Image (cartoon, rainbow over all chains, first blue to last red; front, side, top):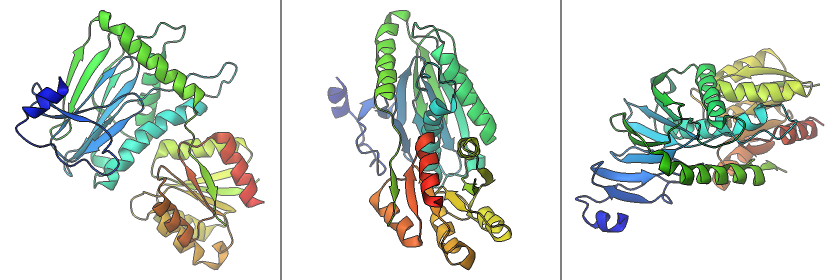
Length: 212
Length: 120
């Protein structure tokens, strides 16, 4: 379907920025733009007039742009679960900090200025049926992160029990949020559970190299 | 116990490094960019500097180069802690005089271990 629609596109997609060539773009008539879909753990930045979309259950997406230098992007992340008996929430928080920092750093490298960043937050719904409210933990993290960094959210739609489809237009800062029907919850819940398990089984710690 | 200077433009990241290393008994001071770090390092002697790469005013690679040019920091371990993981950036860090390269997100226990190792 996406391929058929892409043949109808009036324009060619803009060249992706280095490091983002692997993400597939498709022409989305509803957005009137080439659109990039990101999955849990991914992020995307652009200086073109594109749309970035994702579907969120208990995960969080931050949509961030600098309206002056006209660069923007979106991430999609959640904190891994705490290991039982390991009270130190910093251990899992670092994944969230990394997701936020990777996006912000890439924007700064493209000429964005920290003080000018416009940040919008979405997600953190109560979707997964587990004892702990994963979504609430994710919301608490991202709000804390903004506070520590001295940012204020320009807009947000967080919490509740419906999953969301978010479409972000970084060139204008506009966001379209559609609440999804509960019937769609299961697939989203399954995907997030799978993502959580992958965080647990494959810790994403970066490598350490000591030079000679 | 070592006196450590943690340099990062992200306050959340500075806080995480600070909590991790002070939890291991070190004394940690913070700076938000290379310029601020250099000014602090000139006033006070640190046993180790951990720096991010991409920062306003002065980036981490330049900071490493500047510190190495000062006799007081010629042999002090300088670690880079960054989201950058390309061989090219690492080579720049090594050429500037960095002691090691740590890619974020960092594992707190491994950070503590590598700090213990380089401060010997």
